[in-house]
Amino acid sequence: MKVTGKHLMWPVAAVVMMGLLTGCGFRARRYENPIAKDTQQPDKVLFDKAINDIEHGRFDVARITLQTLISTYETSEFLAKAKLAVADSWYREGGAGGLANAEAEYKEFILFYPTLEEAPEAQEKVCGIHFRLMEKPDRDVDQALRADEECRQVLIQFPNSKFAPMAQQRLREIQEVLAEHEYRVGPSITPRGRFRRLRPAGRLDTAIPAVQQGG
Image (tube, rainbow, N blue to C red):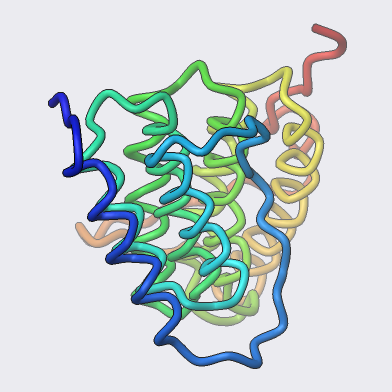
C-alpha cells in the first residue's frame, strides 16, 4: 500500500504522543536487534519509538506502534525487523501468556524469513523458553521434551549459527533431566496412553546432532 502526503505522519504523531503518556522510572535494557540505518523515514521513526518502549518495559505501547508500522507501511524495508520486535516484546514481558505469544511470533518469523540472520536467534529463544520452563526430574517432563525438540531444531535448521553450541549444551542438560526422570519415575506415558521410553544418558553423544565447524 502506497502512503503519500500529509497522511504519512499521523501514525507517527499518534504513537509518539501515546509514549509520552506512559509512566517513567523503568531502568532501560538495551534491545538486541536495533536497526543501524540512520534515517528519518516515518516507518523507521515508528520502529525506533517502539524499540525505546520495549527497552523501558512499555510492551503494550511498543506492540501498538509496531502494528501501526506493519499495517501502514506494508512494503517497508523494516517490516521483518518490526515483526521480530513484536516477538521480542512478548519474550521480554514474560509470563505464561507472554512466552506463548513470543513462541508463536518467533515461529511465524522463522517461517516467513528463514534466511535472515535473526532466524537462528528466534529458534534459540523458542528453545530457551521451554528450557527455562522445565520441571525437576521427579516431576512432569512435558516441557523437557518440548525443549529437547526445539533445541534440536537449532542444530538441524541452523547448524552453523553462533547459537548452535548453546543449543547443544542445553540438549545435554535436557537429556540428563530426561534420563534421571526415567530412572526415578519410569517410562513416561504419552497422551495416547502408550509408554514413552526416553533416551538413556549414555547415548548423549550420538543422540545430539553435532555442531558444524566453520562456515
